[in-house]
Image 1 (cartoon, rainbow, N blue to C red):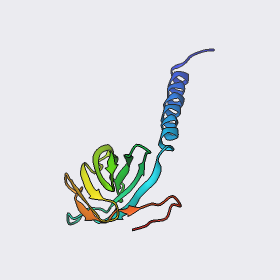
Image 2: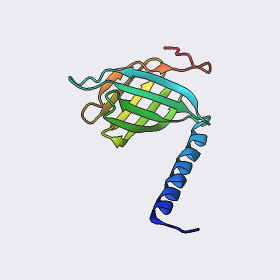
Image 3: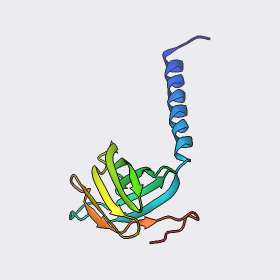
Image 4: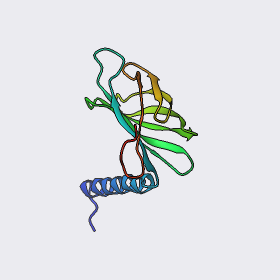
Length: 133
């Protein structure tokens, strides 16, 4: 086989995609837990959207992003007795950065940089994929 720069770059791209998809299988071990959207409490900022899953060990993982698609963040944390804490780290663009603290179905506060500030009631997703408020 004649290895050219194009062939090597294509192989690296395929390996990168395969590695990314391998992470998807891991994410499947999480059950849907929280979903929703809220307006930022900072005037002129885009809405903040989230999808968070919960592992059997209480670990929370998911994503939060601005609805104008200006950035995406990884959300990770834990939940115990309905109380949860998340840390947000930007992974693409200027995603929300900060922390979320709250209690399932009662209330939560996002405190962070710039537009990443809001108070909201998290929607809890039950095993059927329906919101329970």
